[in-house]
Image (cartoon, rainbow over all chains, first blue to last red; front, side):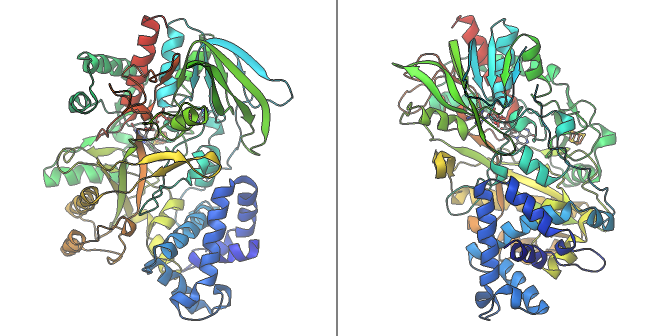
Length: 130
Length: 504
Ligand SMILES: Cc1cc2nc3c(=O)[nH]c(=O)nc-3n(C[C@H](O)[C@H](O)[C@H](O)COP(=O)(O)OP(=O)(O)OC[C@H]3O[C@@H](n4cnc5c(N)ncnc54)[C@H](O)[C@@H]3O)c2cc1C
Ligand code: SF4
């Protein structure tokens, strides 16, 4: 399942003009962390949204295929049409996938370097125990 | 004195103090330090972990995980799904906010007098006196010129060019470095959030602090509240730890936020007709402007410029907001290759926000798993204000040479030029066409003179109970039209001071 969700992150933020895409930012590692660390409601909203992205090409590009079987150009048309869809649910599902993809992609040191931004440090994940 | 973080083991942690304060944010932090300074023994019971600046995350992922309530995933139920943002950490939302400090406007007290029967003519003076003190304690000052960053400077220039009021924001930040990381806490330790100011002071004065300790319910018999109880929860694994019971000799002060305070009362069987009602907010919508030269939203104070020009008519506050790259990818319209082309322009983008002084009213009720659920839909008048806000932002952007603006409204072209503002004027008023976020929240345990229409009185005392007070944003019975933390802190200080004056 992780591979499928990683595919969705890559579909909304693909590589372009020397800028790495989400698929270049270890999306599977990111999703494993997300699965371990995020609360159920957050996770379920993301998983559900990703499934909507996978099964909705029939509505957007009129093909009865899951998104991962679409050729690259049609996949691009599919996600773009989701973003413009008249169906609020479809737009919201895409927004959720974009938000998660943005977290994975925007924190990646290669992406930040390519955009001329300072790389982030490692999140300590610590707290006071005394 | 003592700090109890996550505890395991079969034994219940039992404590007894004069006052128990639930929550450590703007309201809870202020109440706790006021009581501790008065010599009372205080226990602060906070659901989140206690993180110091060196524990704060760098990334947005880390911020959602370590600092935000429910990973920022709470949304309103209604016509549109709008995110409802709050923190769950020692220091509450003061850790992730932009530390903007604005005094309570005088017209608010008149409104409370007219609408909910405020009968204390001294309230305005008292609140402003406390706000004087708070400003000194939290080192409130305007954003230093060297930390402004280009987006804030452009916005100031834009207001000047249009002849509307615009000012450098005053914040509770000591020596801001302009690192635009307020949403992730402030690793530089400059932001004066309550976890680095008042809560350590409570401890120095002998108070007790419990972290990772969400209060499940209030202990009470025959209307007299005697304390709080719950289980520690591990901040990473969310595993249940030991049970805790903290008894209050004098009173329990609930300050767990607009969404959580009503739920604590609800779970404790203290439901009154007004509980969870009167939810209000300042819904905000953002517009991006694209410039020829880099703006660099990663440089400069997260928020450095504001305009209150439209506070009364039509009811708006305009502000700058430097947004991290991770969020921009979600905020820009489109997906796939088109989105990547757009996001490449990140360094040349500025993001400004219009927050609506909305009149729409919602409710808070227990939702899935007993978690608070906000039901809220912006009415047509508020949508008109929101649209007006977006138009004003467009004017500001074009007044300083933006090439294009991206209002992010469904049904409109992705980018609009200066001669296309009329398209915004006709934009849909359906809330689902807009992206709005709720960060300034009010109500749920509103104060008022009438017991049937409010949850507590103007001293925060919950009607029909003894020993139970509320002292956070949930008592505020209206929107303010300005950033709320200063009002919350001062109201809470007033509640705590009056409690001690009456020796309750
Ligand atoms: C992103 C963002 C930016 C903002 N910027 C500004 C700004 O610049 N200026 C401004 O004036 N306002 C700002 N605000 C709003 C402001 O921060 C809040 O209005 C204010 O902090 C609310 O205070 P509070 O005490 O009601 O709640 P909070 O500050 O949220 O504190 C509530 C505390 O209670 C704890 N809690 C919850 N449930 C329980 C429980 N069951 N048991 C124990 N503890 C519990 C929470 O973990 C939290 O620590 C911003 C808000 C956001 C989200
Ligand atoms: S802008 Fe940076 S240095 Fe200034 S308060 Fe925010 S996080 Fe701290």
